Length: 289
Image (tube, rainbow, N blue to C red):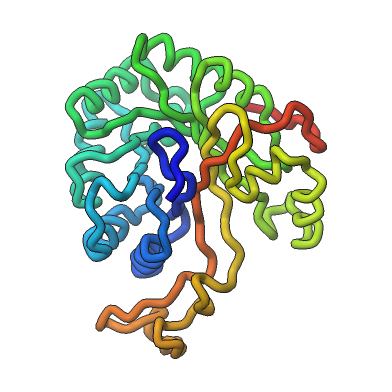
């Protein structure tokens, strides 16, 4: 698996993957070569990710694990217990990357306090790297001021040809902060993406930088990490929804049986490392961030 810096270029995002579907999705992703798994406290699936990691038989240093702490867990003295709970579910002593999922909603908790808590968690060795998610320019600047010499590894934001977010992209680039994108291709039915043909046309017309984001390609520029979502269909020669022996699962058994036979989850989430956007986007700059 190709890496950009420390992080694998492609990875599997588990948002909206719960229970057995999450477990099977992670197992299959690891089997076909993914080595970067993205989860979160708020996804309610960390224990299934952890079980899949154990069942995969892979060594700890072979898989990059990212998780996130939900903003309702930012209260005084709350961050470390929530991180420890996530680690217990993931069956890990340490994650590779810990993100603040959002700034405190409505500034319910003081950023000075919860950033200090995250620094303490990092210093305690519960994560190798510290990052943020959905942070706007003002929150990025506040976080940087509070962290001092400690870097922000990434800012995970929505970014794709339909949402350029040039302001936050340029600001993070100027500050030396990597970006994690979700989704790198707008999804069908989300009210913005139009038909599949329209999306394909948009990718074709977007220019090499955007095509690189779609394909997880390596273009010269600043490292950017992204979360495109794969279409339904084949994964390593198997139809989605079939067992490894080619049989269809019983429709009444949640896509598999208790003996552990598993099916490919039809729609996969994934994380890819791509590169910085081109200087000129064919889409309007909707940088509300």
